[in-house]
Length: 113
Image: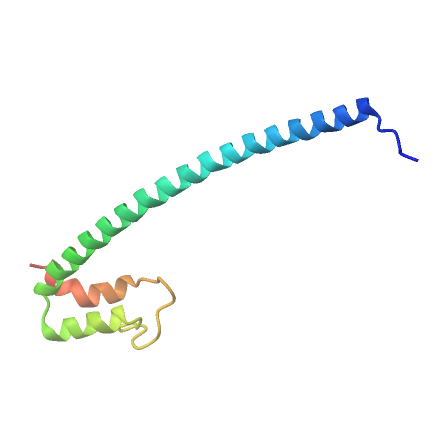
């Protein structure tokens, strides 16, 4: 015996799958547009970040030129993550921490010029 297929039910299921497929394609297109936007923004921020790093490096070179050897040594210690100020000398800086007192010790002489 062969089962009879309900043609109306079959058509309804096919129509439902077609609609779901169309919705999926639309969602994929939206996702692709959003991904392109994020990638474009990421590229722009990468370029800007590189530009800012170059500017910072140039400023550091200019700042280094006016420092005495002892202050350059203090700056090197500070850049390696250690305090060079009287208050916390030798203690580790936290991640991305900066210390105004240390910067004052390193660059104070230069600011007075």
